[in-house]
Length: 308
Ligand SMILES: NC(=O)C1=CN([C@@H]2O[C@H](COP(=O)(O)OP(=O)(O)OC[C@H]3O[C@@H](n4cnc5c(N)ncnc54)[C@H](O)[C@@H]3O)[C@@H](O)[C@H]2O)C=CC1
Ligand SMILES: CC(=O)C(=O)O
Image (cartoon, rainbow, N blue to C red):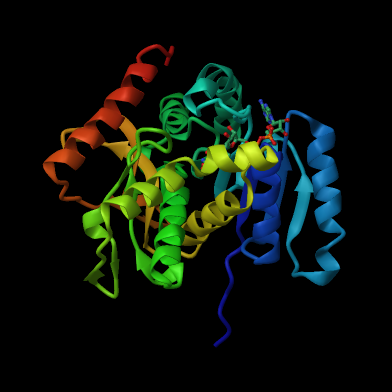
């Protein structure tokens, strides 16, 4: 029997380094049937759409165009990658004032046309702006997701793989908390084939420093990060559209989770067609628990200054 392929539409708002690379990744991997690009700078979205369309003879049959918010009506997933990015030396939290402002109109425009899709936020500070998206959209929290610490966990797995001489796909390891300076590594869970990994104190320090500071290093070197975040967003999108139920460290609303409530943080979560289906319980050591709660408190004190 022929498999009936369901048509799927992803809208990407913000077609800068992150948004356009994500679109290109989805296009190359033939993930969706329809891809819509929206940007405040209409020429930018149009130019990206034209450029990618000219590659279609070499790829698959994705329908891709520069659109407007009415195209959100039929969207399964709406990715937000719009707004300011860090300049060298800036933290992600430094972007909050600039980016929270534009989320008012972006979310209003989305919900004008769509009440059933999943909002996937990449714009920084991603955990706080995902919380803002939840409050402003009125969507249930399972359908408002941030990219969280999925990218940080990928960097962590890559660096552990380098250290151990093992392919990063075979390394299971997690960064949780803020996608930012207060994130934390869960060393006790790092494993290969279920076998725990040993590290010297120096290796632990080096690997975590390089993980946490990766974005600063790349932004200093080339001005923006784009490829790995695009692949991380692709991973989340596929887990949703194909109803995979993959465990991904996305940013999700926490309630009574290790003493933390009413804030978005990156934690291992089961992601399927419904969005975040379930947050997995983590047993944290006393030290990790303090760090995790500090990460939550840091974000909550920033949220308290916002008008929501
Ligand atoms: N969550 C994560 O792991 C990562 C998040 N980021 C974040 O993603 C965001 C985008 O980064 P880049 O693509 O490098 O920035 P960029 O400056 O290259 O692109 C931003 C785009 O947003 C558009 N834009 C601005 N205001 C808009 C609005 N109101 N509506 C629609 N479009 C609007 C701009 O015209 C521009 O094309 C930043 O906040 C950055 O920090 C970047 C990498 C990883
Ligand atoms: C920019 C950013 O958030 C990252 O690459 O991690």
